[in-house]
Image (tube, rainbow, N blue to C red):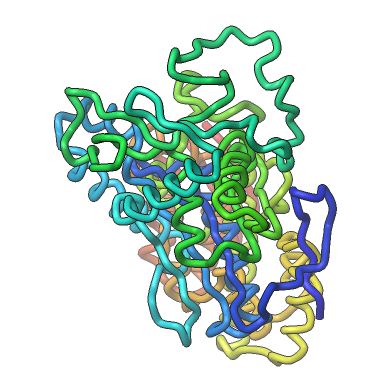
Amino acid sequence: MTLFLYNTLTRKKEPFMPIDASNVRMYVCGPTVYDRAHLGNARSVVVYDVLYRLLRQVYGAEHVTYVRNITDVDDKINTAAIARGITIRQLTEEVTDWFHDDMSALGVLEANNNKPNGLMIEPKATDHITQMVKMIERLINNDKAYAADGHVLFSVKSMPNYGVLSGRIQEDLNAGARIKVESYKRDPNDFVLWKSADAEDDPSSVFDSPWGKGRPGWHIECSAMSTHYLGQDFDIHGGGSDLMFPHHENEIAQSCGAYPGSGFAHMWVHNGFLTVNGEKMSKSLGNFITVRDLLDKGIQGEVIRYALLKTKYNEPLDWNDKLLSDAKKELDTFYRRIKKDGGKEGMQKESDALILKALGEDLNVPSLLSVLHANTGGTLKYMGKILGILQQEPDEWFKGNSTAALGADNDANAVLLTNSSIELLILDRNEAKKAKDWKKADYIRNNLKSHGIILEDRPDGTTDWRRI
């Protein structure tokens, strides 16, 4: 079966035709490790985790290589380290550990070097300075870049097709904008490949180069590392829509400028933006949500993952309480079916056909979720594996964190105790009563009561509730 993906480069859905089916290669821009991963970061990681799982199923795990970088040298990192009064290395190592912990809670596959299970590589920028310097030297030798005042800049005008990905025309890039143009730039649109070090820079963020001490620009690291691990031409480059310009546009310019004749990534895949209650997520608006914020409120990682997958990957996703409560409710339903069927996996051949039919059509996860709703427990467990869900034992799932939220702080309760959340807790309580877990049932009832929620019980279960 042919896999179709929407290619941002051509603005159309295309059949995915790997350069070499025995060596399928994908690169995705990873986190800049200066703070906790927010929901927008998580959406990107979860989307490409599913795509990686799909590629492994279609081409064989041993034939797929996935590279997702860690940006551990950046001005934001320097600023954050100074604000916290710690070294850059301390900050980046701590935040990288946070990132791994949070993504693990969301069921994201970990980086490894075990080819039979699929090769996933997670290179750090600071470990690849040599590769970046060599690529910058190639760009200078190819008259695509120039050195000035200890910096090295890419000459945008040297690439006539600059804007091929984003559709931006060079002449219009700065039209009407009030921008400060550094004196060492030949053109306002030129961007930094190598930045000269400042006297006050932390030594761990300063590296030697032919142009003096400094650090690489943001864009060059992805060009250097993707080429190093995947070659001058590879199959898929992924990332968030916010990276399309200038980051991905500059990657294309750098990579094709360094290696004339190269096509760099043959297919570009971008996931959509994430908003919160219809607004852009922003600390200034008070709606900035990290993965850890939700986990600390007792929300299960699988619920967060499921909520992130309910909207098609390249469409806008609006995060709200209903999305989260609906995700929990649907997962509860699935796990009840799995428990009823004894956790046995269903028929694999038929399930594989359904998986590929849905996900093969531009990674249409909502379509596969609709298929899940129409199937029994055994099939759910098998089909859920490719989405990274439904792999827990049902008893463990129902011992999860839905009730833990009631013991959280008042702010968490204000968020979680929506009507939908209350109904989910009531469902949990009914399940506990069926299992004769009276302690859990009483715990839920008493805590709901402490929050002003009164349940109306009948012999056949809780039929209604009211707020007081």
